[in-house]
Image 1 (cartoon, helix red, strand yellow):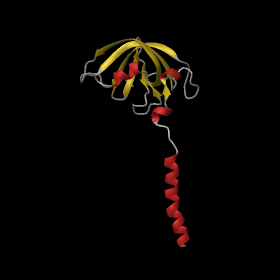
Image 2 (cartoon, rainbow, N blue to C red):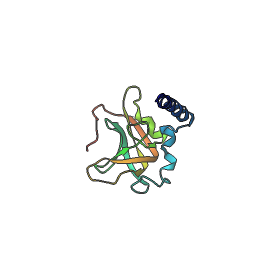
Image 3 (cartoon, rainbow, N blue to C red):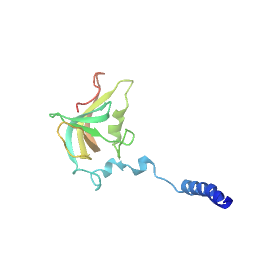
Image 4 (cartoon, rainbow, N blue to C red):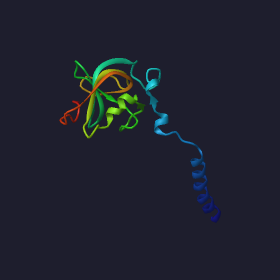
Length: 147
């Protein structure tokens, strides 16, 4: 019996030593970078497409309102709650307030859907690129997109 106890105490220590010796990828290393969004194969509901919209950070995280519609696109980013993509830097800069004021940006976005379109629901997307961005400080009244 003492031999069994000895092996139990050695096993976890040996396992932890082996586990710590193997390099593990961080969340950023595993995430899909913006330049890979349109060429990546797995986990998407369709191809990349362009939208003209307004990017704003709501209580649920960043979202793009598609201008001329009632449709919102939930932007995935690894630094947000459950993102699997890394948004382009010119998009990520709007995720944090500037001089204490939240900001929003109007522009042209190339996105790829992670979830299928369902009327009245947020659709999760990864942003491949954003161009023609026009930024402004937004009023403090915006708290969440309609669901």
